[in-house]
Length: 445
Image 1 (cartoon, rainbow, N blue to C red):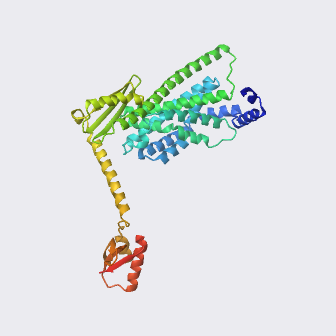
Image 2 (tube, one colour):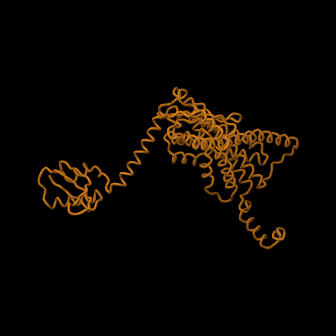
Image 3 (cartoon, rainbow, N blue to C red):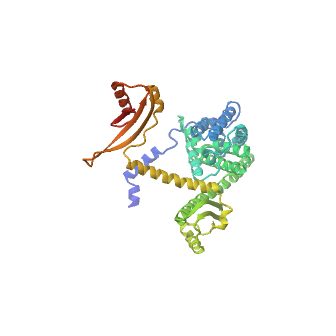
């Protein structure tokens, strides 16, 4: 039945439609033009070099002041994609010269970028690591996927006859420049962990963009470079194979590490959230240590001490969260006192107070039909110069002969001279509009 369906007219129509819709060869640019364009963009000299330096300064400022818009602007003008795609193209078409050129220019661009960002962070008066900068210190599995898929989109766009806005979008998505700026920040501030983590992210992005470029080039059947001297051709092919292997194999291992670490941290967060949900005991600090041979969850607790039986029961449940070989270290009581960071406790207390205060305000506002009026001192003085003081408050009026109530805004004001009835009506109408209430009772003293 399946065989007859595959031979039917409906299946042929579906197959033809899918081939027409997903055919990458339909609007491919001339192969020579694509190679020439990528080769030219791989060069870093003159305008390209100055553009890179300016973009690095802009990205460093954006990371320094925590401005996402500025960082995006820097990534839009960054020319870093050129040599990375050049390396992938060189591997794909067996062009050892293009491979060397792309690698050399990528190394030059990387060194200049780190030097420029280091110089900026040495002279800037702002030295705090903002959230945008911290986000570039630890790669995650999503960075791998974004770099690979973004690289696919970039090389597909580069091989089209009509250029689109895909390349700038890829530059933003793959985020090559912010990690380099973060590495400069790490050098300027002597933080080698930030430096290593940012370079790690940059390396991951670069490798997977190269890999995606290579795959699309081979899928489009770009002609490989041939040499008259067959021994030299074999030598070049051998060099390219060695370089590709030395590059791709570590990247696959690094990608596996990132995926495994992300899964471990996600499972650990779920475990701590569910297993340590106690009324009188609170986790004030958690630290997840990942190593392929050793995984550890470090917790710092305050409040009522958990018994050994309770902790052992919690340890026994770690297998349910896919943490069978993870060590759980719990510090509480005397073991925790010397390691407690009081700023963490203050932050936790302030968070609880803020949450309770917000809840209390919400309940008060729900129960009260009127909110406290705004401060109108400056406006009253400007519009009514004779006004010396005023007081405003919502008041509830009750009638002795009835159970009904009426809420009204009452304003008491003192003027340096007696005001006319027309002026009183004017003040009353203005207060009604300014305070956004239905009625105002103005009492002149």
